[in-house]
Length: 368
Image (cartoon, one colour):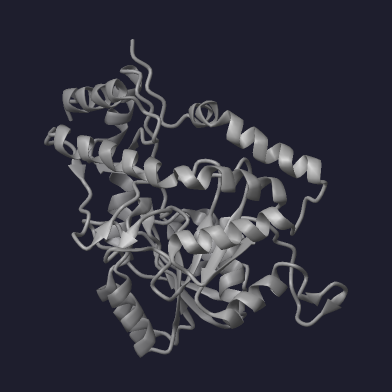
């Protein structure tokens, strides 16, 4: 029987072992492990890749959201809007500021923030910041969302944890002028070998504040200008990311090729593809499909030897940890239905054509 894993990080390492091992050894031999040359160079290279003025490395994608909002003055008593069908770290990063999380619904076809739902929330609350999520690697409608945020005096901080290499209106996510948050968790399109993150910005003032916030508020060693925290991208992770970054465009192209094969090849009427707007290019961090018979589909694919996962089964407002937000089932029907129906197919650049064909064959054989 075929065995198709959902993801396999060892394949990528095997193909680029020499480059990655060399990068790690370079750090070990230098003997400098925090806030050094590798981190500085990766920040420059990542900013250039996404079309931002500056990048500031940090400890994780969650901390990137926390630091970005903090740098924009978000704190206790403020309101920050995001979506319910995101991964919980989005909300965790907001909560770290002490701000109140308010949710809006998503477009049922794209699974991305719905500007109309956002507009309703903005009319009901005095909002400090809006955090759209480029879910699954597909950019949200940044122009409309940014316009609405600006009308209501709110800052836009976008969650691009899954959007490495994605493009909005032909420009990389990160190049639109906003403060953008990135995760380099190992399974991301550009992944470290542990937790890692970054914030990109077009504002020298925000970049300077971020660098202080991530390092105890230090302006220079032992001189603390503002309260801060410890959230630093270590040198080994930065070196690994630098070794991988030159391959990201090729990996993104391969993911797009796999996604196109899924989209044209999976014709089972029991399965629905998400809509990708024509003015964006997804980087296909994930390839979710929808089915009302999700449990049966998962069992069927597992029996076929195809590993599928669910991103994400429980919306934020129905998580036990976030009951205090005061929402109930039915408040965000589109997000809730998506969470009930989405299934992610195997998606990583090292999948073989035979494996992709087998996933398609198996999905089409499902009788929902």
